Image 1 (tube, chains in turn brown, cyan):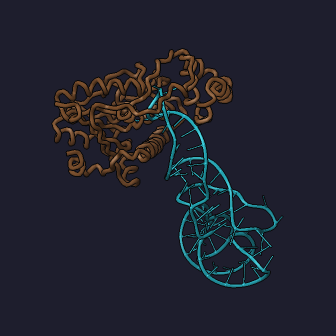
Image 2 (cartoon, helix red, strand yellow):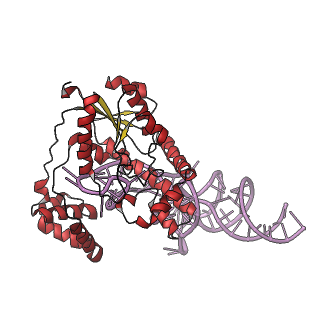
Image 3 (cartoon, rainbow, N blue to C red):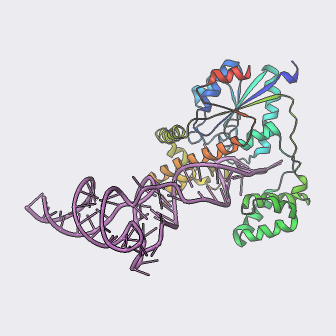
Length: 299
RNA sequence: GGUACCAUAGCUCAGUUGGUAGAGCAACGGACUGAAAAUCCGUGUGUCCCUGGUUCAAAUCCAGGUGGUACCA
């Protein structure tokens, strides 16, 4: 089979829209497998709060990149890109089409368009910069970047500490300007890509989000959060559905407030996801009950 | 039934001696190449309960109505 005949079908969408079931139905129809594109479902310790596919769903279709890591592992978008490309090499041997489903827009883009190859940065360097920011404020890291990479400083969101620190750590680790290491070019893939977004009217989506939080509570989310409480400072746990309950356990919120905040933060997350997908014209938009229409488009 | 208080943004409420209104939260829009469920930026969305009156001018003062809350019957 020629590589050109291979095709990755991306199913994106905001949280709680119904991606998991949709992807299972689609993959079943195509007799293929599913790659998850979800930055939090990769962790084995996080199941209920990340709405991972459950045992019966996993039985229907083979899923990849779900729960294969620990919250103690460091993971990022570049590792995800590499993991998916390796996986696709194997899956395309057996299948002409593979479904990738998830809501992490940056992760999806890394697979579809590629991401610049930059050297790994030592963890201690980032820690140092975080400390500098914490102790001396944002001005300190702004000035530092202005000095090391004035071109990038001009175009960056200067009030965003994570962007500043990222640029700084690359400059410091490589001795080069971050702006010069960014290629801004799209990587060619040896497979075709079709991108779909699932969406619902906002009131319906928000209703689903609120309801799903209640269901997570019934499924024992509180116990799951309790089991990882001691690791709450890990990045993997800077996650909606977990961080709010950490505050509850620390006595900063009532249980009811924590649940309300999870719903609010989930709604805001969904909004940010939609902003991300909207700006990318490659996406075709569908409702989660339009499986037939999606099959029509991809065949 | 009587008395008192209240009625302003989706919610909770500010609003000075009268000059057509503003905070918090929610909401909405956006950015985003190794933390991305992260992080950051921007935006008031209003029959000021209704009807009259006073006034150059009413969210504001007056009268009546409606609705609510509390207390007394």
